[in-house]
Amino acid sequence: MRNTRHSYIRPAIVMTVLLTLATGVVYPLITTGISTALFHQQAEGSLILEGDKLIGSELIGQNFTHNNYFWGRPSATSDTPYNAMASGGSNLAVSNPALDKAVADRVAALRLANPQSSPQVPVDLVTASGSGLDPQISVEAAQWQAQRVASARGLTVAQVTKLIDDNTVSPLVNFLGPTVVNVVQLNHALDQVKAQ
Image (cartoon, rainbow, N blue to C red; front, side, top):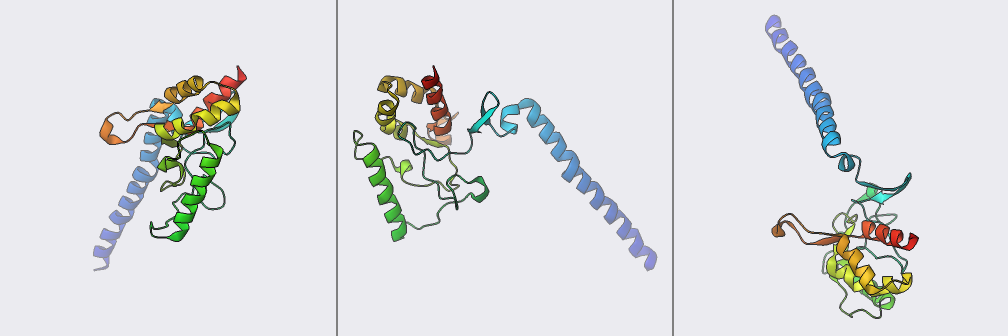
C-alpha cells in the first residue's frame, strides 16, 4: 500500500513542476519574445516619446483641462483622473441622482468653455468609460471642440480639423467598433504644430 502511494505522488510532483515551468516560464518568455519582435511598440506599452521625453501612452487617456487642448472622456478612477492603478467605472446606475448631477455639471462646464459650439454636447464628453482610462473620443466630440482649440492656439478651424482627420482611426470592419480620435495623440500633434 505504501509503495502504491509513492508511485502516484512522484509523477504528480514531476508533472506539476514540468507544467509550471512550461506554462509559467517557457510560454511567457516565448510569447513575450515574439510580441516584442513583431509588435515592438505595442509590446512596450504604445508609448509616445518626444526625443527622450515620455509624453504618455496611446492606450491611456490624460486629464487635459486647458482650452488649447482637446478634452477627453471623463475619468471615474479614484484619487486622480486616468489613474491606471485604479482602473474602473463609477458604478453609478442611470437612476442615481449623483450621476445626473455629474453629467449636468460636465455639460455646464463644456458649454461654458465652448460657447460657440452646439448646445448638444456629445455624450462621450460627459460620461466616463467602464475603465476610466479611454484615450479616445468620437469624431463628433473632437469636432465639437475644434473652434475652442483653434481660437486658443491662434490656428484656423481648417488646420485643427485636418489634425482631427489625421488622428482619426477607423475599425478594420465597421461592426467592430466606431471611428474614434485618440485625444493624447491629437494633442501631441497640436503641440508639434505650435512648435513649428
